[in-house]
Image (cartoon, rainbow, N blue to C red):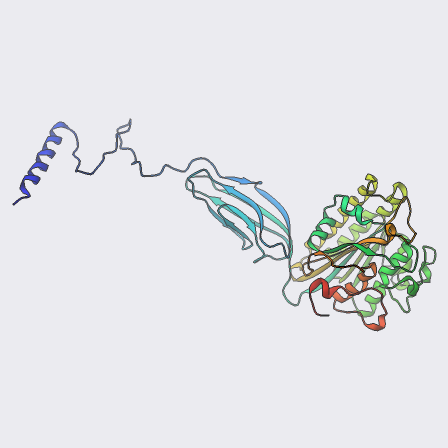
Length: 416
């Protein structure tokens, strides 16, 4: 048979190797070179162990805001040494990762102060975790309770609001609907009395009869009840706080004793407490420090003291937003937050019927509110009244004879 010479050669080879103390190898095999301790080293085609460490940017703890409409938001990134394969997992459905990049997504997210942890690991390396804390305000399920917060900032110029470097107010503008070209009431001078009376009644000064700061008691509650009076009539639980003491004179007499009066910190802390603890539907707060500062140092975008006063109120506004997030039932609530003012200002005063005094900002924000600059013109401080009640399920009727417009259909794309 032809195979015997080959077998004999192999046997001779093995005998020769045994005699010399070596080892035999069949054709096609490569022996691994011995290591210094005499053991056999790994073959070249086996990858080396993963070495180094996993890094996380921008850090191991992240806090951010997420509102309805934000979409997928990149928040962090894990990076592993070259050749290492990352495995990333999260303990919540609203954090996802791809190729080490960490994103927040809307799916599975609920309103409130929520937290998740995302963990990255690789073979042979110490795992790294990022804690993500989110202040979330997203659309609630159907049938949610609706609530309104109106933040009134006396003497707020729109250009100064844009230049002040705010945090909470800028957030509301960025996440909500806004215009920097709204207007005050048209019948009276641009003083606080007629301005706040028009905000509180949704009507022109010629109807509510307050023409200055000296005739507040003349307000026409019989035909034009204020937010407080109308809320009582509709059975809407409401709370009011004001830094300007005279604003109480605009409210129906039966409700004046319930209004919290005091300095900015006092009224802000009171309102934050009411938001956290009480199940009220309508909240109204007035801040006066911006107007005071304008009278003392000047209503100007170039005045650092005036801008500083805006930032001070902004911090109080931020605390009010935090109070909303702290509510125990926030996951089943739909909030509308409005920001308005009574007038602008120029020099150290206001009153004339000109653009500097009549042009004001107007912001509406919330998880159900469409974002962006409100199209067109013709918006007014008087729109706050009908919009607030419509959002709470009481669209204004013709016999209310309002001058303000119900903006809810435009803001939410809901049918009127």
